[in-house]
Length: 114
Image 1 (cartoon, rainbow, N blue to C red):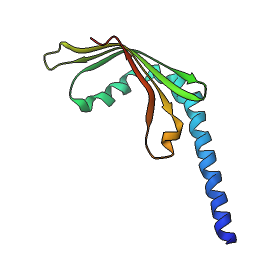
Image 2: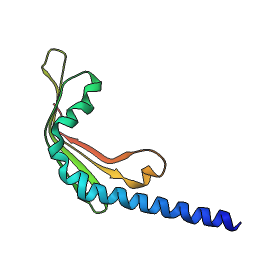
Image 3: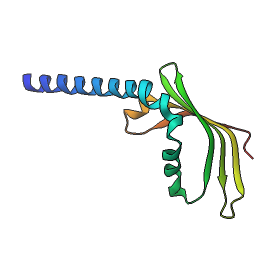
């Protein structure tokens, strides 16, 4: 019984400090430098097979939740014409979704699609 309690206590500390390290990394390292990784972002959209362009990326915090806002998002068709244009796309991470092994973005909003 004692071993089980000790194991549970150590596991709780590992989860706690792992979560704290994740929050600190997002807060001070990843989100403040997100605009500098423009070329790296293009690679994430290569798998859809269509060209995607993003005007700018803004990130920060809404209370204790990180948010991401993309402006001038354009998806192009196979002929190179704009198929979908979104002036603004924004989302906020729901931390509690990570406890269930998913990543839920709330609210996911876009304005004036054309």
